Image 1 (cartoon, rainbow, N blue to C red):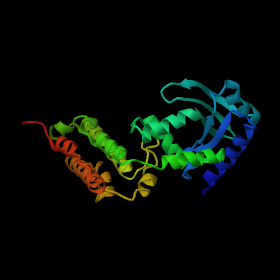
Image 2 (cartoon, rainbow, N blue to C red):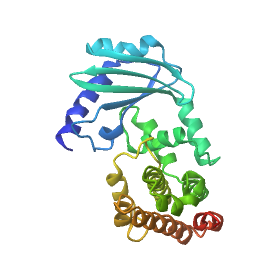
Image 3 (cartoon, one colour):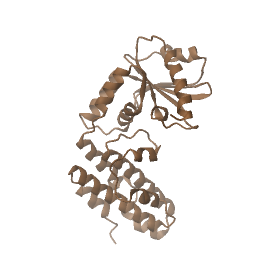
Length: 283
């Protein structure tokens, strides 16, 4: 545990204690980069609270008042993310608390693991369960983590198919035209989209849930991957080659080798995606 993780972990323990008995509170977990043991000097402290019933404003503010912390934002319920959140500063650290109902998480698990739901919000939550540790309610977290450890083959297939479908890469069919015209901004945007699509597909192949809207801590995530396309790291770096034509060659190789990996490992056919990827604008 590095110094930055330890510093934030000590603060997290004090925060968990500040909730007191709080009978409505089922679990307090340390999430984000601190929970994953990756925090650096730029990291905030993310705390996830899971409640039996919808938390009241008083329940959410009570630990902040107890700690003498400085509240900066109190967010209302977010229908899309199905959470309440608040931000404050404690001992100089920025703290973000996300609050969920227990039945919301149970519903997320069912939706992803049984129904194959691809909603990113639900996947973020399952990723958080996998990388968090509990300061209260460890038994519940253990049960959720056991469920979240499952990553069905059909979910892998659906995620790879969605991630590598050319529709995710604006201008893909016109890529050679864009390069020939020197439309660098359009090509760089296309290459960035390819990088993100491959990132998502490789995580799915390795049965890892995406944890954030941004591609954060990418090296740590790739270190967890047992399965990678050949020459993955240099080709990924090659997306930023100063020569747009060379960069595009790396993008094509990344997409097709990632498809190969998925098909070989899971015995699935992604021929429709492959055919779309190799298409170019008719001359």
